[in-house]
Image 1 (cartoon, rainbow, N blue to C red):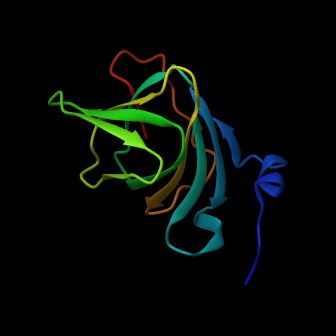
Image 2: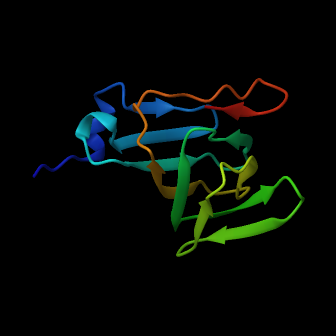
Length: 128
C-alpha cells in the first residue's frame, strides 16, 4: 500500500502542463496497477481537440463545468457529478466553462507512462 498526494506529484515529471491545463498523474504505469488516475484541470475558456489512440479514458467531473463534443457534432454538457467515457478512442473537443476551470478525475487504461503531453498546435488536434 502507498499514499500519494497532489503535492508529492508536483515535485516530479508526473505534474504535466498539457497545453490547456494541468494533469497530476497520481498513478502511472510504473505503479503496476494496470491503469492511470489523474487529477486534471482544464483551464477556463479553453478548447482542445484531443484523441487517445492507445488508451481508453473516463473522466469524472469534481468541479466546474464544460462540454465534450464528438466528431458528429453531438455536444454533451459536463457538470460536477457527471462522468464522460471515451470508450472507442474517440476524437473529441473538450471545452471548459468560460469563467471557471473544469476539474476532472481522469482514468486511463492501459496506463500512461506519466509524462505524455499534448501538442495543441496541430491542425487535426493532439493524439497519443
